[in-house]
Image (tube, rainbow, N blue to C red; front, side):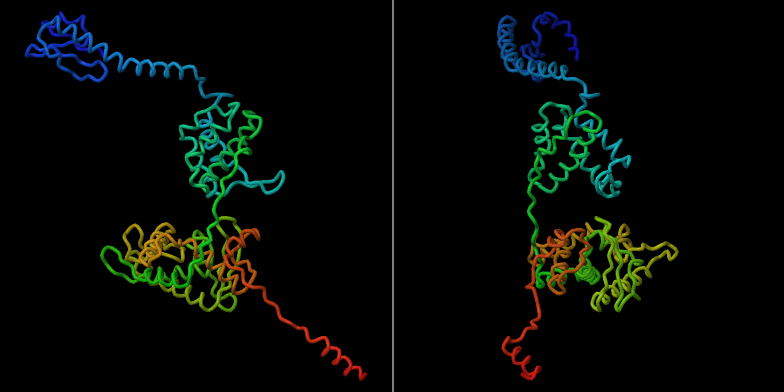
Length: 418
């Protein structure tokens, strides 16, 4: 910015940059960096010029190195090659992969050698969010084809080192990105193979029956906008969650059309896991059928309160009651909202942060294993995942059919008449 022209009476100060004269005749020094004015405590020009020189020298000493450092940094950055071609930065390459490969549906899940299938919509969406986190990180501004990539990659991932699960997800996406870099000839091999996954602690929490009852008892009373309402429907959802023993996404997306009341003795629930697409049928017992019947009746009762009877209702079994606000009433129950209710109820029951809503799947599958032994209710693809959800191993049972050898010998002698 060009400094203002001096007044006519101050033109004699032009050779002293920063030296000014106040209306009371006192000279002052104006710092060229901060703009602050400081009195030189004199009305004599010669004395003011001496003090101005001292002030100017102190200012240059204080700020001169900083200006030089900024200039040096600017000049150094001008020597850095632009992010293009074979020197493209990782952040720009991730963005290019996300928009031109991932979002175009070109990323595949490997089934076996030379065979694959497109990512599911949910996985593609998760990958896109993770890629955005990586590409917006300042630590991703280094060339993909750098000769020593491990250190900058570790630096890029380091902010998430305290969150092992998320760290591993980011590592997996970065591995996909650099696989593509190998494919297009930017790098010779994928460096992610030399970066280890972080160990993730296995969550082994089994909700005691007493804690479950205490938490769901609080869910049965719904305090909303200073009103105390009947929240039995929330308790019944927890019972269904426990009895189905599926992921929350499979519970809250359950549609009425998946419930076959006339099948088998008490009816069946047909589903396919959102995560793995493994299909399964759960044959209900009398207790589970009672819960499902209650929720179906509750759904019909609440839908009967609609003002517009011609509006198509949601297909979901689990819907919010009509007493909720306009944004939620008679719409499908959301996992996030229900999890917050569960956490609040657990805190009120004296179990703050101890038991999560997701733990109901593990409790259901563990209790089922104890009750009936090996089963496929969890709809797992591997035996390892079956074991992951079974926190108690019951003793192996067998029926003895053996008798005393002597008695058996005597019995044989009697039969043969010897």
